[in-house]
Image (tube, rainbow, N blue to C red; front, side, top):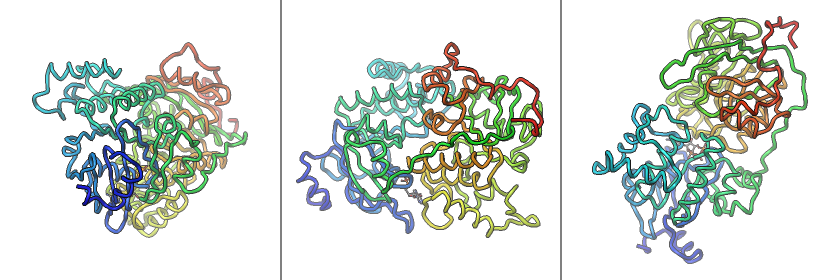
Length: 539
Ligand SMILES: Nc1ncnc2c1ncn2[C@@H]1O[C@H](COP(=O)(O)OP(=O)(O)OP(=O)(O)O)[C@@H](O)[C@H]1O
């Protein structure tokens, strides 16, 4: 088969020794006139955790989808143990021993763990035999799962375990992981790292995609770096720093976030007063007696493990859920609990939900149409009931330039942007409105180091201009980098906020896990018990 391999494969072969387990050579992938992968070579060896690094839009997911048979390359070949193979679909990839753990879980909420796994297993493996295999894997790898639990009752970490067990049941020789820790708590991530190390020791290969460079440095000894669809370098991450890796990805030094020095804190702009809301459905979390207060110029961080009421808190703040008592939610002193999201936007608030596809943005609509969706109440994008398309396009263009949104074509559909670039767009769209109050849920989820620094700096700068900002984030490093004070949401209950400088990751981590024995010193910021001062008298 060697005769048909591209020259780049043969050249590497003579230089780098043994045949790699999997190789991708000369991979080109074009979407219309846009080239997402441009002559990529990648070799993955048995027994290594190989990092695939690159800024948002660099082409990592595209390459991964080609390896897993989800996309067909425009040019180039994939090899298995030196032989060219065809990967027309994921089933073909799985037959060759390629498994994938997806970033967005593909599980049915109402089915049990075993039923979800059975969906992708051969028919002869079901019932008791399958439950036994799941239990066996749990013991062998420390991936404990109760086969009879319904998925809706599981945490993100447990759901990911199902994906991993599902993958391992097929005994893969290569496991592809796309940002596997982005939904995990620090404790859950540790469990995952142990499993990955174990898989590596067994001689399996792992292809690891992550924007978290510290974990890449810890796990991987080889990394391939993509930029603009091309391979721009390879390195041993252990010999690099997180900064030098980020610089390789971006092609220049990544600027550091400059924290705000003190800065005037203005009057109270956002307030929740003992807000309680029942869980909107079986799988949701009720909010209990949540109080908080954010003044202009202040950034309040809400830490917590996913599924502890973050989505419900966001909905209550944005108006997607109405409060039973109108004055339990106030914007600039006005009771807004009964108002919807557009009315709250007209009062000067901006909102960035966690899920960019389908919530923050409509994937099939263009960026300018998406600009219109959230900004029409305030940005003069309609006249006499008609949409001003030119104005919407101008607005989208300003956001794209200010936030360096990389994309194919001038005004593409939101769904064609890479995850990080769409995130930059939806955050930029709200910040560009200069809101008086901004509520962001997971601002830099899946965003590369340079873009994350850009978004965090933009949030800090917005606060410096007098905006009250509430950031919900699972990323404690992020909260300590930008927030002035931090509160923890656990099981729908919010802890008192404490100044970030007076607490620690450990103390916040314990509260995230539900421990109240280690409550950090209480500051008065988030639990106002006194009646609301009038804006003129507030701090
Ligand atoms: N179906 C598609 N149609 C058009 N363009 C696409 C399509 N899929 C991906 N692209 C473009 O290809 C480029 C590479 O995207 P890809 O998702 O591979 O990047 P990535 O490195 O995984 O980024 P991220 O870290 O943000 O997930 C992006 O600019 C994206 O807009």
